[in-house]
Structure formats: structure tokens, C-alpha cells
Length: 147
Image (cartoon, rainbow, N blue to C red; front, side, top):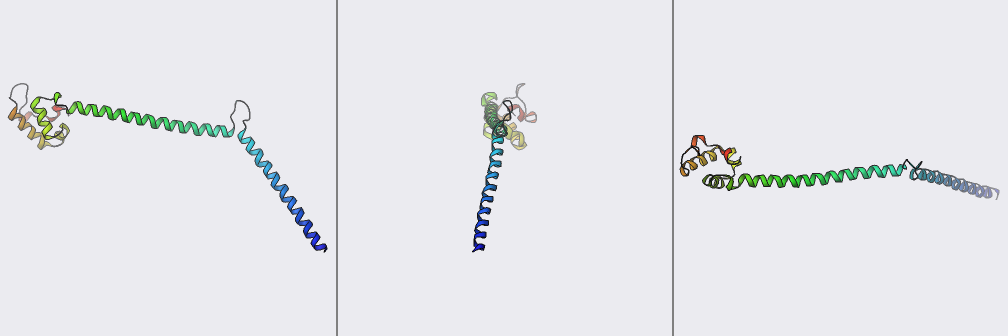
């Protein structure tokens, strides 16, 4: 009977010791959490505030950079398309030469392919009268037409 009472007493002491240990661990965690959340003084933010500020600044700068790149890309694409429209517009080229460039492809294609450039030169010599304002086959330059 004494053995059973000793075992019951030891189990109660062990239960009280573990509750006491858990309670003090809870107090330490609570104190650390309060220290983490509350600022040390009025001028210095808390550790949590510093982390939130750092994350928000980084996120805001990434969002601003993304928007800036997006709008710069839109603007750049708009400028490129306007320039391409001006380069390829027939009003910028002589009438026959503009039509030939339109039939054979863009002036960039003529720059890359010397056979098409020679064909355009031959066709220009066929349809455009030779005077000081126009060039002959040997003088044909595809860069003249917007390249």
C-alpha cells in the first residue's frame, strides 16, 4: 500500500513540475514575442515593424520596376511600329520604286537579299526614266528606300 501511495505522490510531483516548466516556457515565449512586437523607444521601430517595412519597400520597388518596364515596353513598341510604318510607307518612296518595294518585300528584305535588290534595280531601270534624279542598275542602293 505504501508503494502505491509513493507512486501516486511521485506522479503528482512530476505533473506539478511539468506544469511549472511549461508555464515558465510560456512566459519566456510571451516575453520574447512582446519584445519582438513592441518598439524599444518611440524613434526606433520594433523588430516586426522593421521586417514589415523592409518587405514592403522591396515589394513596392519590384512593383514599380515592373510597371516601369511594362510602360517602357509599350512605349518602345509604339515608337518602333510608328517608325516601321514611316519607313515602309509608299509616300516616302518614289512611286514606281515604292510599288516595287511593296511587291518584292520590305526594304529590309532587299538589304538582306542581293538577288531581290538586283531584281528591284532591273525593274526600276525598266520603268523609271534615266536622268540625274534616278540611278541606273549598277548604282542601285536598297538603303535609299527606307533601310
